[in-house]
Image (cartoon, rainbow, N blue to C red; front, side, top):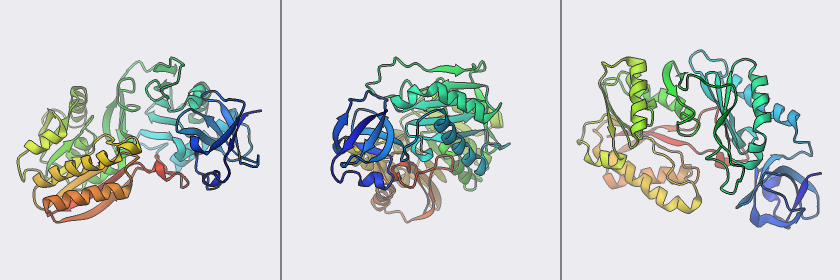
Length: 396
């Protein structure tokens, strides 16, 4: 028998539309006070079952696991993870010879809210964003091993930095199956090689979600002077060189990221390549850059807004960044610009770029509207899951 949460009158409308979150303001009563991470039943104001999920404190008090009156047990986890894997098989990622890194579980997009699982060659990296999912990490690990059937030999849990602030489990990042002796995984993405270090890298180790957008970049970089800002480990830089770029400037504020960018460039092209790196603030670097030098500029900053309270400042930051790039870029050039801020929707982002174009008085046309790839699916009932927005612009 699960503990229960009874909703206020008419506060079940979002659940009737299968939205997977319940906010604290919708709660009328608790039947048995749940602890962080407990599974709870959600009841309507007239005591009818409507959903079951993980309880957590904060503004979102429950992440819904199911709208059916079913047990949350090993069979439940196995079915959900198996369905996620089938999607990646359909997308041509699970058995690809040219891409060996992909996202296997994408939270709400795979109806497993609070759970991320990325595959890097033969290593799986999981990240729990809720206490409920963290409690299930060993069961999830065992099911991953079962479903992937010999395709992985290590599972690394990297949840310590993503759990709620009030989680008191003393979680630490560690291998919960196997051990990656190499420490550095070499993965393939569209045939390009990249070094991934799950233990020390950002997120789970690599920004998998830009895979398809990096492939698109290749068609625009032949004989081009390219600037890749917020380059992290050089994903877009490698793609630009694969497309035949004349010169690449890679900029990041982290020396560790720049060091790994060098390694990835060397891994794919050797040392005799026209590639330069700069440890610098991207805004500052663009402001001081030579006018009309770059044929292609890539703007892929970290999230400027992780919460709605930061939305206004984030939109202004995107506007300033894009205006700086548009002011410097060569006529008849290409700008790749992105936002990974969930709080900044597609309209907010497009308006910020529009404002930047108006400020600089450049004639700008949209060539592509970019999104996250198929292994980062968006649950149609959870539009907030569409976090990655991108535009490819032709700038006259």
